[in-house]
Image (cartoon, rainbow, N blue to C red; front, side, top):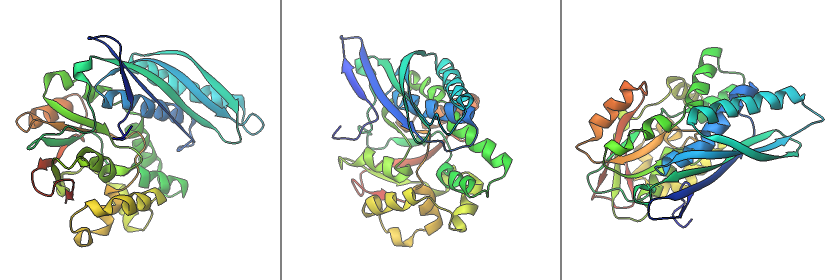
Length: 303
C-alpha cells in the first residue's frame, strides 16, 4: 500500500500467488449495458497490471429501486457478465444494496506466479515506456455530460473504456517487463509519477508520440476539462520539469483522469518496438512507445 500499487498480492505457495482488487463507480455513459462493460473492464484491469490472470469475480451493486426500473440493473449486470466471460473469469456471487444512486463494479481475484508479479515500481535505467490506450476519455466523458459529443465519439469512448487490458497483458511472458501499472483516475502523469517515486530513475516523455483521442484535444482547447484533471495537476505538477513552458492544453490531456485506461509498461529498450508491433498486430492500434526511463532528473518527469 505504501507504493500505491494496483492490487494486493498474497503468496500461497512457491508457484502460486493470489491477486485481489475491488473497484466500482457511478455511471459515466447513459447505456446501462455499456456501463456494465466499462465498470467490469476497469475492475479487471488491476489484475492485468500486476501481471496476473483474473479467475473469479463478485458483483458490487447499489441500486435505486424507487427511481429506476429493474431492467436497467439487468442490463448493467449483463454487460458486466459478458466482459467477465471475455476475460475468462467466473462470476461467483456478489452483494447489492438499495442506494440513492446506481453504482456497479467488481471484486476480482486473480492468480500469478510469485516470480512474475509486476509492480508499479522497478523500471530500469534505459527501459522504454509503452502506453496501450489513447488518452482523453475523461475529457470526452465531460463533453458527453454536457451533450457536446456526437454518437460516433460516444461509441469510440465506450469502445476504448470497455476494451480489456487482457490482450496486451497476454504478451508479457515473451518480453522483459520490469514494471507495469494502468492509467486511471490520476491521469498519465499521476500514474507515471508512481513509477518513479523511489527516485532511482527519471522519465522522459516523447510528447508527440503519446496517443490522444483527437476530439479530446478540441474539447480541452474549449476549456471542457474535468475537475479531476485540475486536482491531479495540483498534486503532481512539482514533479514535472519546467511545467510553465508546456502547452496548457497538452497538460490537461496528460493529467486527465481516465476510466479503464490503458497499461503503462516499462520494457527493455531492445524489445519495445517488437512489443508494440505485436500489440498492433492484435488490433491494439493506439499502442505506442511514449517515454524512456533515464538517469537524469531522478524522480521527475521531463516532457
